[in-house]
Image (cartoon, one colour):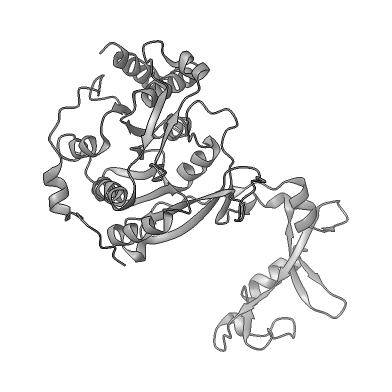
Length: 380
């Protein structure tokens, strides 16, 4: 898929149009593992690619860019006063680029992001229903349709009862792509609630343990393999095969893990206390904070989930629209290295305060070193 619109640049034209800069906003020694950078993310990312050798070094990218809303977002006066007395305006950021200009604005940054991504990297782009479908076509173009993984729906708020001729909007969209098929994936489980356990594991054994049962056979006929052979005088149903070999089924039966119905149908027992939880689905309920420190601040548990799934302990996480620093906080809590970029002084102030508060309780040398790094930003 390919979107054509006025003033669309080639990849070469994008790189040539970005001025070279020196990032004086990066402070601390070059050994600092994580960076909070104030500046235009397009220029900063070019610098990271060419001067700091970050090409193909980023394992995970999460961005929550502007949504082309044509609005100016502000911090409340009370909140603005707690951030900094030196910043008189309470404007957090302006989302006033719209139409084709917005699409090219985002596309240029995605082109550079892909160059920064490692071969095992993934990217999550947080957007909404008004612009998200156009963004998907752009991401198909840059990352390849074959590397599209999920369109995630994120429940962002409680139902609203606005009087308008439309359905209520309680969700936004997260587009999930990889750079190659060999991307990091650390399966995470959604913990069971008591309601989940009572609903999914309705049976109780003599020891009081809750369980359910599943069929021992699966779709697909296997005539020559072990899973197509007779077990205890029973063949799998027509068009199906045993999930395990007869030898394994015999072992399960001896261990009391097979339940036989009155009509002689075997099913495998699955105990609730042996399951870590449920697989996450493509609808995620992580509502926005009720009292955010910054407009559009996202739920930190959402970011921790995505980072846990799509990065490793030695990974670098990039958020080049870092805003209030939620991605950076989540990465820090999960012991990832990270790079945060934003061109809003208000955003940098909020992110710094949140990060410093989070790291004051830490005593490791790396976090202390980064704490000093943040302090140096204030002295510039």
